[in-house]
Length: 395
Image (tube, rainbow, N blue to C red; front, side):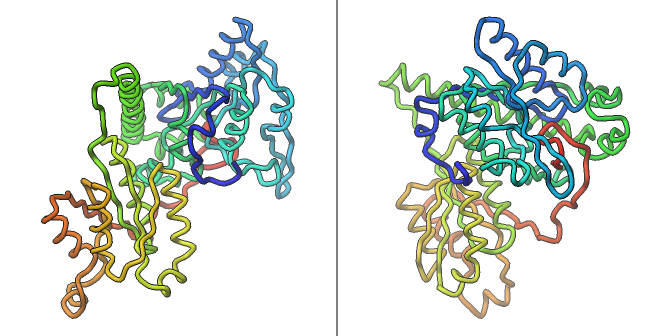
C-alpha cells in the first residue's frame, strides 16, 4: 500500500475491518467530536476501542470526549529541527483493537515517521488486518474536488486523498453545519486560535466558499447514497436491469493543464454514475519520451479519481479516440481545448478537437470541450491556519 495505485477494492476489504468516515465541508463542523462520540458509544457497549490518533487543535470539548478511551502513544519524530508527533502504526497493529479512531485521513506523514507517506495508507493497513477504522476527512481533500476548491478559494489544497479510498468506506456520514454557524464558531475561537481567525475569515472561511464547500459535500454524499440504493436493488430485484448507460471518455496528452481536465471529467462521471475512461494516444516516440514523467503523473491521477487508464498507439490521435469510443460504447467525450492557432490548422492537418468534433457528430456521441487552465493562473500559495486535515500542513 506504499503507492497510490488503486488496488482492486474487493482485495482490500474482503475479510477486513469495517471502515467508517465522517465527512465535513470544512474544519470545525464537528467531525472529530462525532468520531469520538461513536468511539465512546461502542466502548460503552463493550467494544475494544483505542485512539490511534486524534488532533484536538486545543479544543477543550474535543479533549473531554477522549476521557475513558485508551490512547496509543504517538511516535515522536525530529524533522528539520522541529519535533512532530505522528500515529504509531506499528503500535496500533501490535495492540490490535477491535476499533481504532484515526483522525485526518488526508494527512501527510512527516518523512521518517513510518513506511507510508499518507495516513490513508496507514488506515488501509489497519483495515487489512481486520481492525475497524473510524476516521474523518474534509470534502476539499478528495482528489477529484481539490482543484475546483483551489480555483474557488485561491488557497492551495496540498493534502489529498484518492476518491477510491473514500468510496470504499462501508459508511460515510456527513457532519453538517451552516456557514453562519461555522463563522460564529471561528469568531469565538472554537476552531482556530484567535491570532489565526482574521486570515481564516477573509480567505478560506468566507461565506461564499463555505456555501460552495457544503454543496460539494452534499452532492458527493448524495452520489454515494444513490449508489448504495442501486446495489440494494440489484441484490434483491435481480430480474430488473439497472445498468449505467453513460460512458465517458477523456482524451489526454502530456501537455500542461490536462490534470484539471481529468478532475473535471471525474466530477462529471460521478454525477452521471458513468464509467470514466482516460485514453492517452501515443502518436510518436519523441513525444512519448519527452512527456514520460507528466504522463505517468496523469496515470496516477486517473487511478486516484477512479478512472480506467488506456494507452493507444496511432498516427491520427483524433481517429484513434473515435475508434476507441465506438469499440467501448462511449456516450460522451471530453477534450481539452486546442492550443493550435487557426493558421496552424489551415496549413496543417486538423487538430484532434476538430477531428473528434466532426466524427463524433456523425456517430451520435456528445462532445465536451473544456478550457485548459493556464499554469500562470494556478492559485497562489497562501498560508492558511491549520485545519483539521493535518496539524502542521496547509490545505
